[in-house]
Image (cartoon, rainbow, N blue to C red; front, top):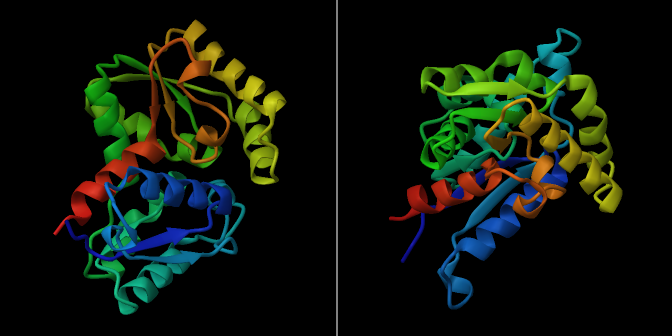
Length: 226
């Protein structure tokens, strides 16, 4: 089996990008080095903040993301992936900048929710995702209700994870947020921020957990096959 060369628009945040790449490596059916896909990565933590941009408090990251995509394409990428949910608010700007496809994280996340049979999804997402309605609008179009976490509750945790706090205390706090969404009627939890799966897995949640990072990995493997 051979794969198209993948370009990764990364660095938002760096640990989430590494998590995506590690999962991609683990999920590839390879017997040796040459069985893995070629991956080009632009890990750019200096891309303008997505949350600040959507709050009207900072510049748009769109031009930077588009430039990263063009650079990856020029280097030989044949397919793009961007392991950051919030950055997909600018997906159209990226697609307009290149001739190669971008695997849409929101689309694959919603598809995974639909496969799960969820009727009311609890969103563990950053403020930018909640403000933009990236998931709530797409899920509503699919006939699925959402329960949203309060930004003031999750953003401090996301920032701590970005700073390297992924220990037992953080895992317990994120699990408590998920439990609160279940208490409010969620029958499925959507890990709609790439920092969330760094501290939360199915063993900590009483209802099905849809991990969008894993859904992106599976979609990339499918679409990269020649």
